[in-house]
Image (cartoon, rainbow, N blue to C red; front, top):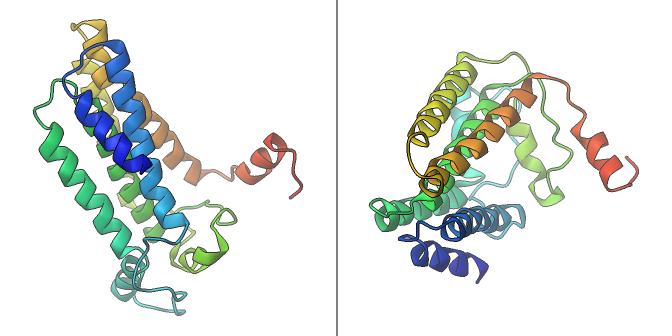
Length: 210
């Protein structure tokens, strides 16, 4: 229901160039994405494979098994993405589409980098019902794909910020807000390179014990 309301708001604000309209579309896209992610982590829409990865599984076989753990969810993400492209591609206020695209592509980038290997990643936050997905995450040296991801994402940030120049303040928000979100996604990727104790940080925030 929340996802439907968010999608409806994106349609209603697709022609709004006011600050309120643009901000509403941005928030609606984030909420829509949150509903999509929640459907996975609650185990409602996941995949066909729910078993840990067998040891010494070859790369391609491991990829197919890993994809099977979330195939239905990936198709949901893909389907919603195409719906938003069709509905908002020529919209005056396309911030919702850009926001969803940033979250969508950077999520796939993060998952692929985790599959290929990163030096640091904390799996303790993964729900128990999805604990098997941690066996598909590889920790170790980074691969060239990580640098390709960062370069491509940084290029898109530059393009979005460039588009936000020499236009009205309201119109610039359509490009600036997804750019800021993309910068945060790049920062999240960089956290995979350092032994960042995020669990301890959140434990302090919520005053809980490790």
